Length: 169
Ligand SMILES: NC(=O)c1ccc[n+]([C@@H]2O[C@H](COP(=O)([O-])OP(=O)(O)OC[C@H]3O[C@@H](n4cnc5c(N)ncnc54)[C@H](OP(=O)(O)O)[C@@H]3O)[C@@H](O)[C@H]2O)c1
Image (cartoon, rainbow, N blue to C red; front, side):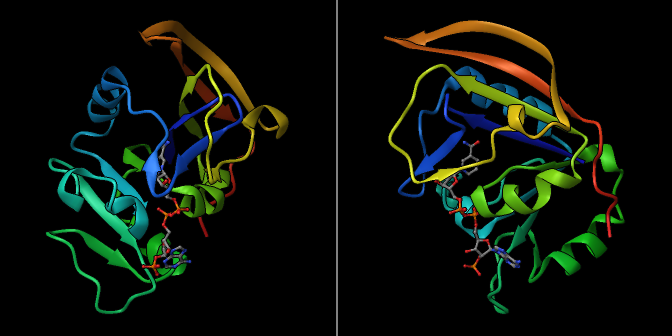
């Protein structure tokens, strides 16, 4: 299982329900990596997608505790237990955890690879993920960049590997 995220220098990921700084090239690489794959997201992250709809060309699995929730063609799971049961149907490498904060926090420990876009700036934020460089088990194995977006905004693509992923329950 993989995760993919864009963080700022402090590992912040969002504010007021939105991304901190969408970067068009980064959104393209997100699409390229996840197309024809399985994306796993929390219900709040669904609202950040275009039109508030599941992503086209991908199997969308949405976590919510709302029993009557539905979204165009998406698979709904009401608990992590249900999610893990559902994920058995897919190849581990095809699964991408795509946010947000609550979902990353629970599922990053099960991931083997993390695709992290690091924006070299600090934003005002209300949502973050743990700093992988302080975990001991996650190591950056590749870095591309920095690239310039605009003004004072630079970003890099990092690939992290987890030496001790939790086994799927
Ligand atoms: N930078 C990035 O790469 C990135 C990526 C994605 C999102 N984000 C940002 O992250 C923020 C959203 O993150 P968030 O933490 O507020 O919300 P979230 O993780 O997207 O979704 C939280 C929701 O997931 C559902 N949920 C959580 N635990 C569950 C469980 N055990 N069983 C069933 N459902 C469960 C609940 O939905 P219900 O309330 O419906 O029950 C909960 O309200 C936004 O600012 C967004 O822009 C950033």
